[in-house]
Structure formats: structure tokens, C-alpha cells
Length: 283
Image (cartoon, rainbow, N blue to C red; front, side, top):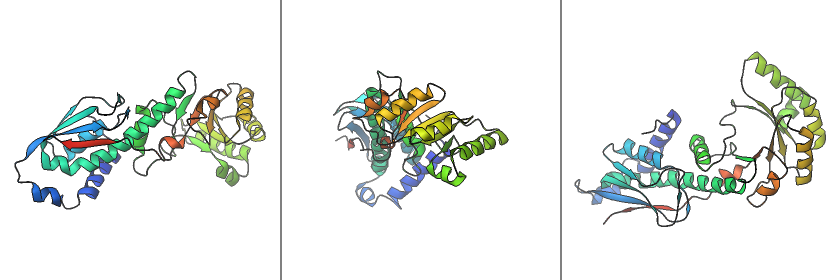
């Protein structure tokens, strides 16, 4: 079984405590202590499955005697009616973890499914889709795992992964050149291996950036397609380019046609629709 990071283990235990409380009183009322059996996880619609390995871990945390028989793997496509897995063991334990398992799996599968739609749209281009930090607090590791499962690429996991100079940083520093200079100095002073990225919104800001040393990525934020294409041509491979703002599945191909290296989309995680999955006990 996979070894999960401490934050995921803590999240799972918190989620079980949150849902079960002092005990599942409905199941306790009906359960005699002898009921053993199985339950099936079934896809209710087409999509990409994600979270099965986590579901197995949740089962082990609650009851180490539960057995998971997985018929698909995370990242595989399923169609409506597909039997994803069968859980065998104590029925009271299975019912007690039902909602926690589904809450995680449905969200993660929804993210993976949406990301897969974006990556397929970009398949004929060299542009890659990125996620953002617009994740559910506490779920970032799992949200970004789901993005990777769907074929996407993770941007920053945390604020210590990469320098990203945005509008408010520029205002705080007093200008673009000052902000870049301070980040370059901080990086050298602390021996950091983190890249430096800066957000620009127009050609004037881009020219200021290109006159500085030390920048690795330029984020072209909320630019029109023509302006973005001109910016990519002006950069001419000096740094990596990332398109951001107002990204939808409908305009994804047009943005990629500007020649950007990456397109970032908060929609992969911040407002994802859960994939419909059910858990049913066998009669």
C-alpha cells in the first residue's frame, strides 16, 4: 500500500472523526455484530477514476481487516456502470466509511476528469496545462495528485516552491525592476534553487522584465490573444511563458496557438464538479 504524507494521514483521520463522530448510530442499531459481506463501488457516469488508493487507505485506518479488490487503477477511464472495486469484510465498518470514501473519490475523480479534458484539448500542441493554488484548504496534496492523474502538470505546491512576483509584490517593492532585484538577491543569499516568475499584463511591463537578469518564467496575465502572441514572439524563448486568466475549455486551443509553454487554470480545482460514484452493499 502507498505511504501517504503526514498531512494526508491527518486529513483522513480528521475526516473520519468529522463524519462518524462518537459512532454511526443507525448502523449500530441495525448491526448484530455478525454481518460480513461486500460492497461495490460503481461509476454512475463516464470519467477518470482517482482516489482508489486513498479509499483503500481510509478503509485500513478504520478497519484493518477490510479487503479492497480494485478492478481499475487510478488514472483509468471508466464508463457509466463500471464496477470500480469491491470491498469485503465487516459491513458496519464499510457503512461507516462510505461517505468519507465517496467524498474523497468523487472530488478527486472530478478533478482528474476535468484535467483530462484539458490535456486532450492540448494533445496536438506543445503547451502543457498547469494547476494553481486554488485548492480546498488541507486538500492541496490530493487536489494536485488528481491533476497529475488526469495528465496535468503541477505549478507551485506551496509558497516556498518558486518565486512568483505578482501585482501586489510589485506595488510593495515599488516597481518591477526592484521586485526582481530583491528576489534575485534573496535567492542568492539563501542558496535557493527556486525559479523566479513574474506576472505582466502588457508589453510595457514585459519590456521592463526583459531588461532584468534572473527571471525564468513570465506569466502573461489576462492578455488578449493578439497581445499574448506578440509577447511570446518578443520573448523568443528567453524565458518560459505561462498564460493565465479567463482560461476555459472553449478557448484553450486558441491560447495554445499563441505559442505559450504553459496555460494555468484555477478551474481544474477551485470549482470542480464531483464525478458521480456510488457504493452499494451486495444483497
